[in-house]
Length: 69
Image (tube, rainbow, N blue to C red; front, side):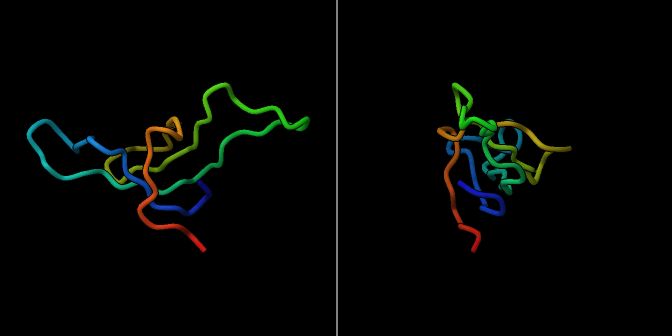
């Protein structure tokens, strides 16, 4: 997953009773430290279409629907 990819969180909805899905853009890649260390659970910063900023989501919860070039 890389910056600019469009993602969804399968099974999620905008609000209760709404059948639409939020779409997000990966804004921050998963953290890799200066010595190559990574997070125990890899998370990426996602700017959601229904959000108010960047949310850090586990990569395994997301599905890429359109890769950036």
